[in-house]
Image 1 (cartoon, rainbow over the protein chains, first blue to last red):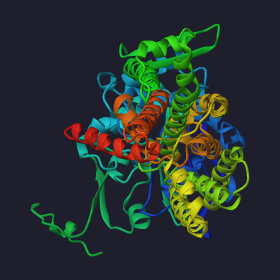
Image 2: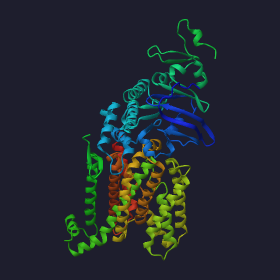
Image 3: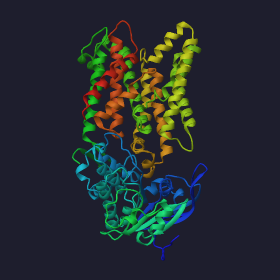
Amino acid sequence: MIEEAKTPMKALETRELTLAYGDAKVIDNLSMHIPKGKITVFIGSNGSGKSTLLRALARLMKPSRGAVVLDGQEIATMPTKLVARKLAILPQGPIAPEGLTVLQLVKQGRYPYQHWLKQWSEEDEIMVMRALQATNMEAFAERTVDSLSGGQRQRAWIAMTLAQGTSTILLDEPTTYLDMAHQIEVLDLLFDLNAKEQRTIVMVLHDINLACRYAHHIVAIKDKTVYASGKPEEIVNCELIRHVFGMDCTVMADPLFGTPLCIPLGKGRCVAEGNRVHAAAPR
Amino acid sequence: MNKYVRFRSKSAGFSFLVDRKALAATCILAMLTLALLVASAGIGTMRLSPLEVLKVLIGMGEETNATVVLEFRLPRILTAMLVGAELAAAGAIMQGIIRNPLASPDIVGVTGGASVAAVAFITMFETASVVWLPPFALIGALAVTLLIYVLAWKSGVTSMRLVLIGVGIGAAMSALTTLCVVMAPVNLTGKAVIWLTGTVYGANWKDVLALLCWMLVFMPLALVYGRAVNAHQLGDDVAFGIGDPVQRNRFILLFICAALAGSAVALGGAIGFVALIAPHIARKLVGPAIGGLLPASAFIGALMVMFADLVGRTAFAPLDVPAGVFTAAVGAPFFIYLLYKHRNQ
């Protein structure tokens, strides 16, 4: 475990958290925290429990032991509406009903501030417009969600979470099913939201290289607990990848960004001059 | 934003955003309903012009006309209207909370519960007064809904379990209903089958009043909790994430749904297809947001049952064919036509 030297402000915290499906433990006795105002990315192999942990942080899953703490208060004891004003979650691959317009979807982000008589206050309108603006979706407000491309659709959903006006946003694999251009589009948007508005962003990503490029803080999950956490450039190396993903690789600095770039070893065509030894290194 | 109208008052503390298209569609549907009501009240063995019907309605008609319209036709037409509206609203809610376009109270067993109770009543308590039939059917609907909910419970109720258990219970209920019909003496079988088809024959002002009171409680409640339907349509995780107490509201909505559908079939019999199809037609007109969908569905359901009853009452006169025969016969082709028309969109 690599701990950061000085403890930054905590957006979210787990205390001796144990998560289980029936008798099968997924996360065991985990105490960790999410730094405030930073982008945190969970990485780990399939079935490592990173999505489960994210769901528990968003109170979508009840811990079998321990607690999740938001702003110094146990999340399980807080009214769900109150939590929804502080923390937004975008689950993996959400589906909007056919015919729902982008505006109607984004408007749902105002749910925790509304009641049956008050469904479109001035503040609601301002927040929804601002969310559409931030995600560059203003032109699509009247379009139905099902008529959008994958990247636009994901931006519409992110706009909904923005309209919630929370300081923390959790996203479960926001780039799944998107092609590379759309992945970058979504991640750039989240990066901007963090940089301009200091929102805490926590997400699960499968692409280690994109995780290293966008995250201030990486949490690698392995064996029902956190294997390592910290700045990508400090913790991501061959050894970590081998332990967390069971894969051999070379890690170098990204030629453009300088962040760790992970190149998996294994088979494949090799057309590089004089570098064959490296690519064919024994496992 | 010019496609929407804002209704906002700071002093009264309310604010709504209404889709112009949905508002216009609902107004047109309301006018159509009124027109069909007037036309229908004039059609029958004794024909009256819409003008004569209107005269009667404002208390200036001839006495014989007034008797025909007010005593015989209007209670029946209004019952058909209210029954249709309730069924369609129940269907719209159920499709929203179950997130399945095939969900409706008649498919997930709610109506089945009413059917068993009603048919058991008809065939077993031959001598009992018919005024007890509606409460019996309503209790049947509510009890079976509760049973479905309890059986679907597994640290919370998911929509998938709800619909699967509902379909199972629905099949069991229909088997029980058949058993009751088969075991009954022949003279009661016909009565039971007519109830199962669904008819508003013989409806009186007391029925209208009872339905109206019931609706005045549950329709506003449905609109109040409609917000939650909008949330549930996005999936349990999103709904919970934006602050909806999903389990609590799902139970309340299911209860509202059972109360609406249960009271409708209690007085109209097991009229099929309306709860399934009316919300789909409405969705094509006003989209899936419940604030527009609920009223539009209710009017379409009202139109469907009123029209079906008009056809049943007049087309084969003097034979009175149950409205339930025509809701499917008229509704299904119309729905297929709608799908066909929109096939390229």
